[in-house]
Image (tube, rainbow, N blue to C red):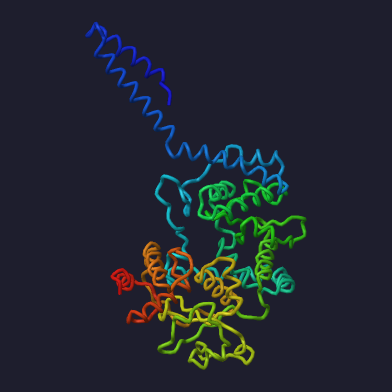
Length: 439
C-alpha cells in the first residue's frame, strides 16, 4: 500500500507546522518516526493477509496444472486464454480455507430439508404437468432413447425436471472458476483437479464455450447436470449434429442422462422402488443397502404394497432393500437395484425419491400413499456430532458428513436398542443429548 499524493501534501504541511512550533524538531521527529513505523507495519500486515497470500497461491496452483492439461490435449493457447485473470471464489460452500473459519458442509436441499419440504406437493404437481406435456412433445426422441438405453422416458424427464426445472433454471456460476476453486481449496481437491482439466478439454474440443459453461456450486453443468468428466464418459450426440450439446439440445441432454444410468447398471423393465406399508414393530435397522431380500421375504415379514395393490410373481422374486427416510415415521419403500443406479446420479435418498415419484406421476401414477410426518431436521453439525458418537461406539463406519442417510439412521437404531431407548432410527435432539450424556 503506497502513499498517495494527498498523503504526501498532508505530511509536508504537518512537518512545516511542527518546525514552527518546535524549532529543534526532536519531538515531532520521534512522532513522525512512530507514524512511519506504524504505517510500514500496517502495509506488511495487509500484504501478508490470507486473501493476498491465497490469491498468489491460487495463481501458482493454476500454473502448475499446465503439464496435466497439455497431456490431456489442451493447447497452450486455450489454457492461457481460459485461465488468464481467473480468480478463486471463496464464497463457495464446502471449502477448506487456511487461516479462515470453515465454510461448513454444503447447504444442499437434499441434506438439510425434511422430506415434506423437499418433496413439496406443489412442486411435484407443477413438474408433473409440464413433464407430461414434454413427454408428448418429445415422444419420438424418448422412445428412441428407451430403445437404445433401456431407460424409460419419464425417468430422464424427471431428472431434467429436478435438475434444472426443464431448462428454466439458469445455473449461476462460472464453471471454470468453480472447478478451479474446488480443486485449490475444496474438500475433494483431487477429484476437482481432474474436473478442471476435463472442462478445459470440453472447451478445447468445441463442445461448449466458456460463456455457456455455467454450473452449480459443485461444478455440474447442462440441462441434466453433468460434471465434465461424466459428460466425457456418457455424453451422446443424439441429434446427430456432430457434437454433444447438453446445454441447448434436449435430445443430447436426455440421451446422455439415459446413457449414464445405463452405464451404471440400469435394468430395463425393473421399477425403481415400491411404496409399502411397514408392519408394526418393523426393525428399521434393516434399512441399509447391505440387507437385501426377495420381495416375497419382505412380504412374509409383513411388508405389503400400498393401496391394496398386488405384487406379481416376477416382482416377488426381485431383490429389494428397505428404505424408511423418516425412520419408523412416514412412508416406507422396497428399493430395487435401479434405485441405487439413480442414486449414483445424486447421492441422496430424497433426490431419488423426488425423481422416482415424479417419473411415476408423469407416467400416470399418483402421490405417496403415506404422508410425510417429520417437521424438523437436526442441524448438520448436530448430525455430525451424532455420527462421531456412533463411530466412537463402533456402530458407524462411514464418513462424518452431517447427513442423516441410510447408514446413519441404521446405526442410530442400533444405538437406541442398546441404550434402551425407543427404536425409531430418526435423529432427534433427545437422542443426541442421551449420547452426549454417555448413556
